[in-house]
Image (cartoon, rainbow, N blue to C red; front, top):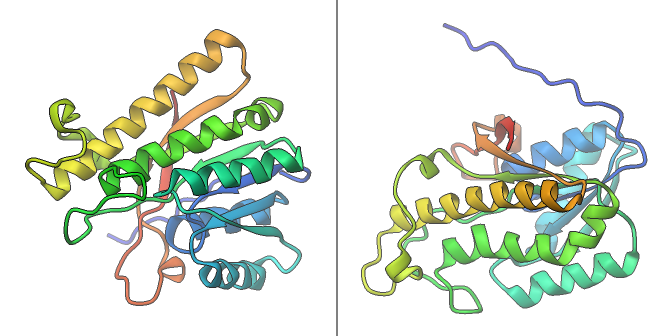
Length: 232
């Protein structure tokens, strides 16, 4: 049976500022393009400047007048996360949309972040956790919608409380699942605290699907993209 194309009407986002982590390819590129089409100014924080510029070129093929701005961000370094936070706070402009999208899945061997955390946990969860903390004043000012990309892998496994960094017995998929469980719990808690303290932030989690082939980076067979948002 042929698949039915599902489309979502995106409201006019003129005058809104959006930040999409990992917007250089895959789901991030697709989301950034759609936000730009709706008129938002899109900030693209990426680790590789060349890929960031290539993403901007790709988006402008579809949206010639797109308002795009690259920024530097390595989510596996809390110093880099703090630097981006400093930059955006210094600009002093409210953020209306934040898509916590970038992530690491199944590295070939156990690796750690610049700060010594297991790479998937440190990047997927802790990096984004820190980013939201640094941007919180801007998110509150923009009454932002924050969407955090989790994974179907969060339905399995647990948090390995006795060995969060998987130093004693590393299992790549269990570590990945842990990172997404933790990230989902963060999305829930962000929404709870926003409601309790009147921050005006809407926290959402997204269940990934599949990005169209045009969004895939060279050499990759598939790429996940958030297709279903649930307000938590």
